[in-house]
Amino acid sequence: MTTRPLRLGVLTPSSNTALEPLTSAIVATLPGCSAHFARFRVTEISLSEQALGQFDDSKILAAAELLADAKVDAIGWSGTSSGWLGFEADRRLCARIGERTGIPATTAVLALNEMLALRGITRLGLVTPYTADVQQRIVANYAALGIEVVAERHLGIRVNHDFAQVEPARLMDLMHEVVAARPQAVTTFCTNLHAAPLAEALERATDVPLLDTVATTVWGLLRAAGADPGAVRGWGRCFGWR
Image 1 (cartoon, rainbow, N blue to C red):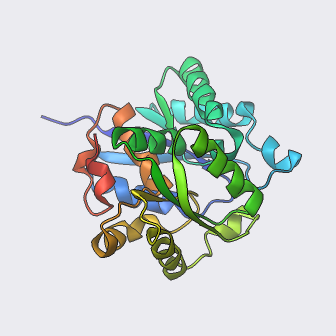
Image 2 (image 1 turned 90 degrees about the vertical axis):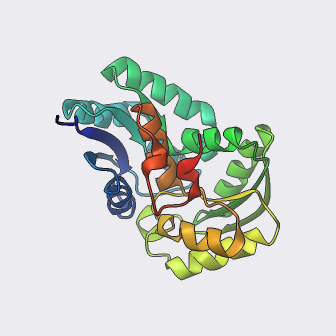
């Protein structure tokens, strides 16, 4: 008997070089599962009008329609823009993707927020490459959900392509710094960081789960497609969360 392939569609910022290989590596742990990508233009993360306009739904929906041609089982926006735009932006996007394609949709941030709710997490550590004003928006949006960012680190970078140049050792140092404030979980909140492979090492050293947003996207996609994220091994304990 042949098992039907599981195809996950991933919406990708055009200048991102981290999430595609990382996503493919995560789903490679699942027999018969593959990831398929469609890009739309994102080159800068800031609060300028031009930068915010990159996340206009019409551009994202056009990319989602291309993924629908591949008959993917779920579509995920592997980006964190609703962290500063407001979480309603992702809820609206997912509804529109569903209306346009008939395919269930999720996002990195909505999946992360679902994880936080499942585990009753109200104390969060936040690590990003973003500028201070973007970081403040993210912190404020989580505060509105009743989640306190008890410690944060950001690198002040605006150019999306440059996020992927941050060394994993630097990311690990930043995560250890925020763990000192005793959060219930740490999130590396950017899908162009090479942070997902650090989950098991951080968790062994600190007993604090890492919720990387590349990983949360995959977790959300698997759930949206009716598959079990718990079958993923080697990418952190969050994949076992239900």
